[in-house]
Length: 240
Length: 240
DNA sequence: ATAAGGGACATAACAACGTTATGTATAGGC
DNA sequence: GCCTATACATAACGTTGTTATGTCCCTTAT
Image 1 (tube, rainbow over the protein chains, first blue to last red):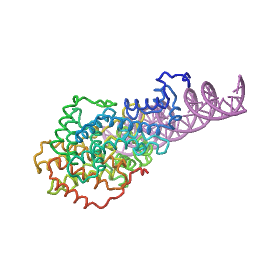
Image 2: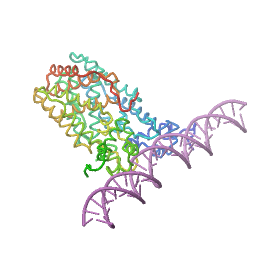
Image 3: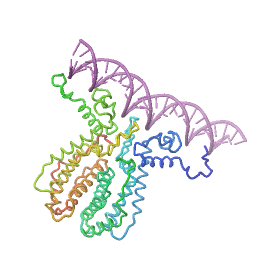
Image 4: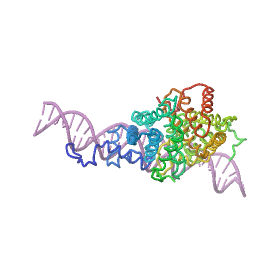
């Protein structure tokens, strides 16, 4: 094998573990959870299935690492959202970025939330059950961003006896549910879900934690006007 | 084919198809999606795996039928929620019943929303992709109940330029997301998620579609006071 | 410099899964 | 009474994750 240790690797042949993880995420995005197979993955990186066990210990733990990586990327994407001086606009922008990132990586998003168990595989054990709790610490970083944004809205707004963490959990629930239903195709392929559902939903919740109704509505309209266009979103699976 | 009366079937041995479906739902609730295996199911009803293919055509279509049955039960449960003369109270009660039913059948709920693909099985085809779209007509009946409740709130409340279907979709998103996160254990096992998150969330949304804030809050408090107690919810899988 | 040791990997085998092929027995129509 | 079709059991097939085994090559100690 030409992968020398001291020698300079062709940059494409990085750490085999990273190559496996990257290929797994690629397979997931392209073919859904059922494409996450040891043999297919090994063929993708030009190795044998043993590589999965040497570097991860099994498919279950590899999937856990995919979830962790997904949360890391998610947190990074949330951090990149530019902050302005309007807490309400920032909160809505954060929610929109959340939705956009999720719909850019629908399969990964579903897997992150334990939502597509990638197959009740054998082995008898519980290998797959890896709910979100396992890869959670990385997810809490992303959640912390939401809590901060919510806190700013509450502090800037009128009186609100609600705890920021609770309010953030409510907003997270709403956006999470919307994202999953949009990914599942419940809202049709019109592509107007953001303007028709997500932004009004976010507006109601912003008002609920103290934002001025007309101000929140104005922010929502501004964001809607600033979005490129209602583009068709293609699932990795290309269902109907 | 009718269930023979004259034959000596002990009444518990009804239509084999129903026995299979019932056993499959039982297996799902008890052991999660990975317990939905042809061999295990056949053993459960004392038949061979061929029964799955004679009566359903395969595991994929059996799972589709499970989803359909799940939506039917869901719709029935929504219909049973008593309606009063207060549209806001009715809407909140409907949301609570939604959450209660989902947490009574967490595995079934997740499967219904395509959320746990029961394993990317082989066969090469797409057998599993059965998203919600397949079993949707039964689900729309349940959704229609929500639209009706939302419509009553909008009509009874102040001016609201929102379409009832859109408002209902937003509320559905919120409750759906909350339910999934609670099932996934994101809100801890304190059992206070309903009072701390779901009811405030529902209150904000009710206000957002025209309900009077103090009235909505009063309804929420009444419902919270009327609930038995924050009981521990045990997942079928008994994780951690 | 040389030999021992260990990690990474390929190959092959194993158990379990969904599915299919094959055979059999029973119920209903002529 | 025979014929056909349906329901079912049994067994085999292909694919899955996993494990056992062997073989390199690099590292390290002597």
